[in-house]
Image 1 (tube, rainbow, N blue to C red):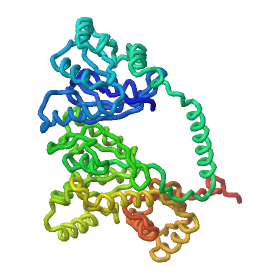
Image 2: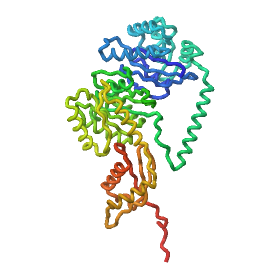
Image 3: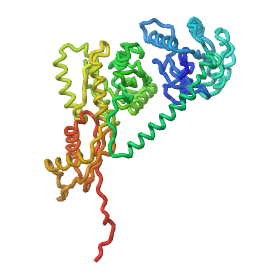
Image 4: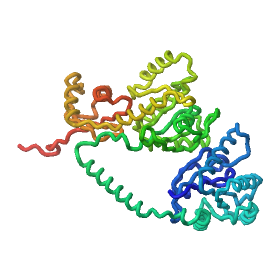
Amino acid sequence: MSFTVAIVGRPNVGKSTLFNRLVGKKLALVDDTPGVTRDRRPGEAKLVDLRFTIIDTAGLEEAGPDTLEGRMRAQTEAAIDDADLTLFVVDAKSGLTPLDKTFGELLRRSGKPVVLVANKSEARGSDGGFYDAFTLGLGEPVPISAEHGQGMIDLRDAIVEAIGEERAFPEDDEDEAETDVDVRDAINGADEEAEGEVEPAYDETKPLRVAIVGRPNAGKSTLINRFLGEDRLLTGPEAGITRDSISVEWDWRGRTIKMFDTAGMRRKARVQEKLEKLSVADALRAIRFAETVVIVFDATIPFEKQDLQIVDLVLREGRAAVLAFNKWDLVEDAQAVLADLREKTERLLPQARGIRAVPISGQTGYGLDKLMQNIIDTDRVWNKRISTARLNRWLEGVQIQHPPPAVSGRRLKLKYMTQVKARPPAFMVSCTRPEALPESYVRYLINGLRNDFQMPGVPIRVHFKSGDNPFEGRKKKR
């Protein structure tokens, strides 16, 4: 991207709506409630022929540094410092407020280029607010409607004028063409590998998508901030601070990690407000998009019913799961608590036998390297492939050790087995009368696969189908 733009303004002027318009997706949560956005959210924006990085920010408010609003303002000021250009959004429909004038002065002192944007200009009676915006002394306002997409051409021209044409349109066409060729070659090579029988070995260098989930106030944002080494995400003692699912990128031992911070997930019966429902839906999308999911437990009150339901949800989605027992610095008798947690993990999560669990402290940084190593190890298992020959030798052995049961006087036969996919590992077994196979025998096969092929803690799926009978449907000849 050629440059970075931050969207700022007081609450409920339409910053997130403009952000979604520029990135072309509904990434940021939008609601009539003021103060929905709290964290900085970056995105890749496209405006006619411009390409740049856009940052959505919390609404600017006057508050003390120790309050939630004050910490939100600090996040916004950090975004202004990181940006090359600021879009100062005001509400033309409701007109200017003293807050607008205060923050206009703040932007003027920052010394960064500013484009004044008068949003909601399509509304009746917005002319007065549009002309009032001239009094801010930040140049001519650009009238737009982020909701309806009006005025985007004028906004594009204002951005180019403020940032300069050389910065707005860098000469990198040749580099992009070479990149496109490289991407096409990589795709063609991947297709050739997919056609072969042998899957490539696990790639230790490919980027890894990790989602951090858990109950409210379990320490998810604090954990990510500790990984990054900076206060990138808003944190505090209040429960439910995070609303949007925010993604951040960083390197761990030469590997790119894209980590998603998500809103705390309460019991479904307690989620009544529309805004919280939107936040939970955003967290579920982050789980589906991720490869590995870290479920953060509060070590002082672990294994609440909601914790177990979140783990079960992650496993049903087919994601690789790792448990992180956070706030370990608050635990007094660490050895006794650790033994108790191990026993409860095995007993309460039988569907993920062998799931990796790591005691950590997001506040002090204890156990974070071990957590990352367990994430990598779990992802390796999640991507595992087993050859058909090994599977069929194993299938023959387990049937000798424990034959399939006889149902209605006829013994079931398991004939053939192969792995149909990875991520998570899924297997197909050709057998007689698959609908009659007891669930207990299915669990026996899954546990055998998990133990004999070292696949702890990941969901394993086994599908059964009957072999085709070539003589079925034919009349018997005399």
